[in-house]
Image 1 (cartoon, rainbow, N blue to C red):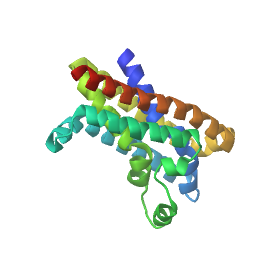
Image 2: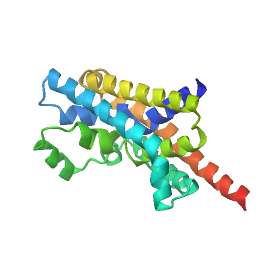
Image 3: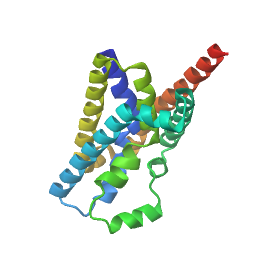
Length: 207
C-alpha cells in the first residue's frame, strides 16, 4: 500500500493535472458539456495507456538502445526538475509543450484528447522516465499490481479534474491554480533532485 501511495503522489506531482486546467479550459471553450466530457474521458484513457506501456515496455526499449538505468534516472531527474521549475514560475504553457504554433494547429483539429492533451501535456518524458526507473526496483507481481492501480487511480483523477475543469477554473481562479501548481512544482523539483542524487550515489558506490 505504501508503494501505491508513493507512486500515486509522485505521478500526480509530475503530471500536474491541476496545471492543465486553464489550458484545457482554453482549448475547449467552444465545446458543449457532452464534448468536454468525451475529451476528458479519452484523455484519461490515453494517459493510462501511455503510462502503462512506459511502465511495462520501457525497460526493453532502454535495453534495445543500450541506455543504462542510471543514465535514465539522471536524465529523467533533470526533466522532472525542469518541469517543476516551470510550474514554480507559473509557466504552464511552456511546461505543457504549448506554444502559438500548437494552439493554431489545435483550432483545425477535431480531436485533441491524444495530442496535445494526453501527450505531451500530461504524459511526457518526465512521467515516462519515472515509471521506467520505478519498474527496475519494483517488478514483483504484487509491486506491479499496486503500481498499475496507482496509474489507474491517477488516470481517474485526471478525468475528474478535466471533467470539472471549467467549474474549477471559476472556483479557484487563476491565482488559486497558480498557487496549487507552485506547491506541486516544489514537490516535483524535489522528486527530480532525489532521482539525480540517487543516481550519483549509485555511481559513487560502483567506483
